[in-house]
Length: 384
Image (cartoon, rainbow, N blue to C red; front, side):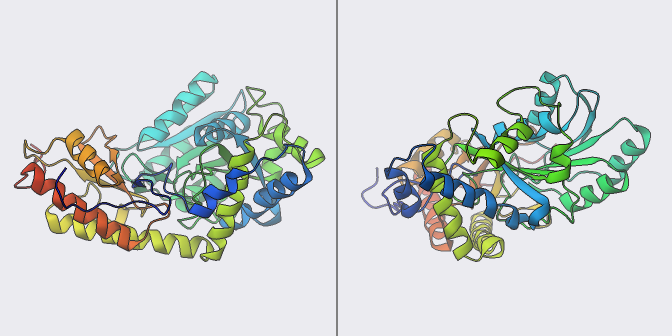
């Protein structure tokens, strides 16, 4: 390592995670996990109840919506949502422009549910006219699914506009808001959403281990008999929680207690506007600094969500991503490789317990690494 270089650490001495989650958490969120609770203990049941009651307000859910927790990662929640809401004789229109839409497709294929796909490239927003044409042509479609922010590219999808089409054609509407929940505006009733899936380790800044689905109560009741598995049956989970206050199976207690603390910090920051505003500042700092060095963003600003930014890979042979990654990690910054089929790329996240000063330190570290590697230009390969 060079004698002098930019090195950053979190307040607990860990590298900063410039990723879409798991992400850098506050010291107080981590500290919440150092105690033990019984899963039937009154203190834990109160904490869990407060978590579940506070989440619908983030998407303007009100009394018409209920939170159903799912033990596991965000994908557990998405699978629970899809396999609970889409019935055996139903059909889901999947709006896809990235890997997480493709994952939903695979979930429904395994569950033996019919699907119809409206797909655009990873750097292209959904085609609303095409979606409406498909809805007109196939009356057997019962539900529409979309990813709010596709972290494959970082693109922001038009969830409210797609929701308007779901309402117009009387379809159920299912939203994967995993990477956007708490940072980007989402009005569940206005979007006509029957269910919104998210998890503890994204923009609320908790730790991994708890997924959840915010469900419109009437739509949830109508799922009776749909579930394809015992553990991912949202209606059964909800009924047991409402009756007993307890989970059917062992809950991730420490994760829930940490999430409770994370929610307290989230609302203290001003809720979605406050959290989203900080992330937007991080994103702008990052994009401005990277573009000043010559890096090219995959997306135009109008499509970019302030969650994670995809940069095109430099053409210079001296830029080797694994070496670039390792040298940034030595300096205390962990980034993500690309996940695109449309271009060679890498990704840098803007979320977590980070602010503009952290992004400026990351930019300093990137400049140092480029100099150390002898990269003369970060211009990307031009398309043929």
